[in-house]
Length: 216
Figure (tube, rainbow, N blue to C red):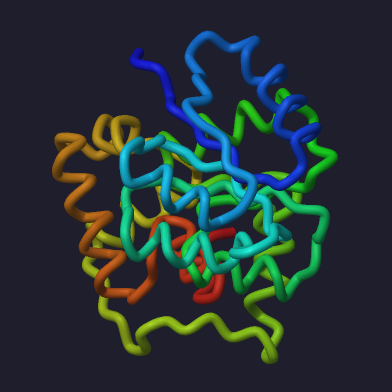
């Protein structure tokens, strides 16, 4: 397995140092650069592309919200894992809508941070403890928090099948094995789902599935 390249954007040196120590225990993870605000992050991305960015929300000059939007617009393949002190419902929904791939609290154990990096890298999203499906359900069913999806989306049986397996946190390779397709075909279906539903990434697809009661 080639190493997963990571960038850390956070204005607290002490947090970045602690995170690097925690991640260094896993030889498959490599921190390739750090930035202490969104602007510095965007500059570094011009010459160095990580697989996953661990993004703080509250930073000077350009905050994590703004930086997440910019990364999404310019580098759609890079996964963004937001790490913050806020576990506010509205924040979580907004972050998912602008294209974050996962959401962690700052007091998360290093083990879970490592697990979430693998999850966003392989599955495109990480919704475990903070944004688990129950919380997600509560959020998207509240009428004051309406994620914007395309209405009247018609999905084929195959697309529905893939969507349900995505919601079970299966990777493209695992889905391919289960429904006897190539991983590339599964990837094509996932991409088609993203376009049909009108979301930015796999995390948005999961929100759509929850909103429409397609998953338990």
